[in-house]
Image (spheres, rainbow, N blue to C red):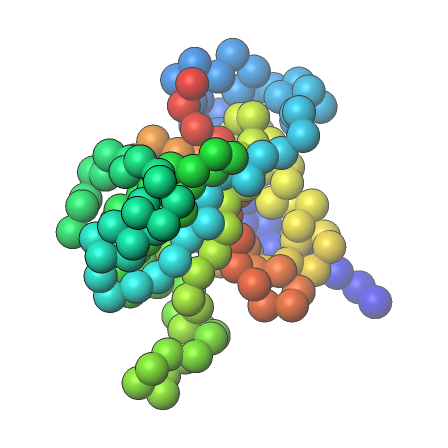
Length: 168
């Protein structure tokens, strides 16, 4: 079996955004020094993020997280991570429109999880490793408007996950 990896990831350190407070950004040290990855967020796609967040906050006695766009995203913080609720339009932004059941008979993804990594270089390295292991890159690593450096991938079984480095 031959694995072909598309050259869609930045390979030059100058192409890697420097995250504020990431002293190791732009070096392989942050990949080698990566502590055990942490689950950062489980994301659920729903028509009513506010109602979903209210339910889970009440269920888990959890706190609400601030949102830059409360109409399309709400988050609930629980020990060990975050449950995020996004409107269906998030599918287009993350290129998630190609699988999974929807009530209207169309297909689309219904959720994904996020793994927090130490820095942008670690996102690049783990993205490459995921592709080598058979994952499909959905969204190349990039700096998001909310400050995270992220890549979206689909594992060989079809589940979507995100790799993310946060500003410190």
